[in-house]
Length: 92
Image 1 (tube, rainbow, N blue to C red):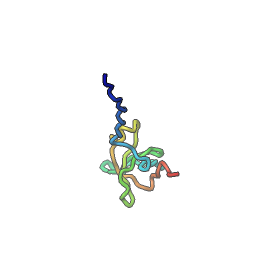
Image 2 (cartoon, helix red, strand yellow):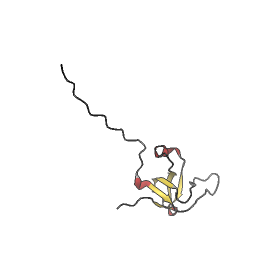
Image 3 (cartoon, one colour):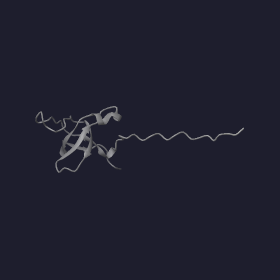
Image 4 (cartoon, helix red, strand yellow):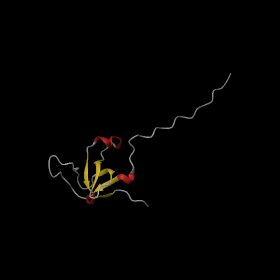
């Protein structure tokens, strides 16, 4: 009788929409869109945002993080005034 070798279990797949802590920001103030066709993101003080692009001089592009975190891409994207947010995590 030949023994078949035991295979280790497969590695778990990394999520394709993983969240990077350095891109998570916390809102310092409430902000509401200035008009109905505005591209600005609405948020409240304490909300967590996931910032996608920080290349703009005054505005960043991001979206609100909602629970569960694996569905974070389902919220709408918009412009965020960079002085209204700060990084949620600091490097130690």
